Length: 193
Image (cartoon, rainbow, N blue to C red; front, side, top):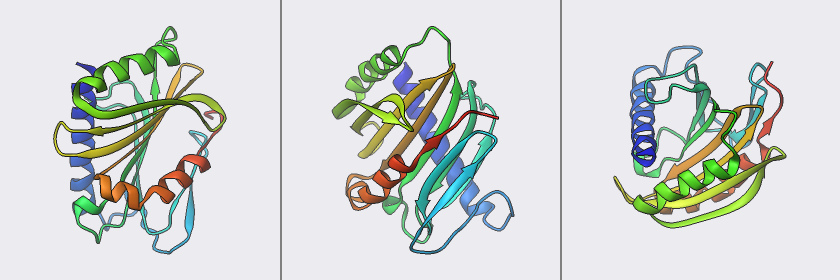
């Protein structure tokens, strides 16, 4: 059930991003295009987030919950350059969600792994850190809709779940691995204002 919700969430986010990308590119404050070879720094002082991202990628911010994610507080999505075909694009989401105080990081990991083992191949899990916070990373290939490689990193602090997710077709994922690693290493989470 949770994996179906996660797949539905990814499909909805992906669809929403496409609609937004093609219908609101010229609206100030929705998409923030930057075109250069260097990394830029996304900063959101209100939510205490800093992430380096490739300078020719775009980002989109969304505050508050949605029907498929009622506990979400904030999301920033990053998209690789729009001049490429969809199969060549990398999609990145950084989410902050409210969670139950009783949910531990191990509980969250076990729920996700159990559900992913039913719909994915080559599921790898390891302990890691996200901005110095204890976290876990799940690396898997989803076979539900079309072959997609995914890396999800999740950390829990002060009743909030922080998640950083990357998805792309396997070849595209490998070609962008340096960008993905830079984004992971550069993620800085401070206290929410």
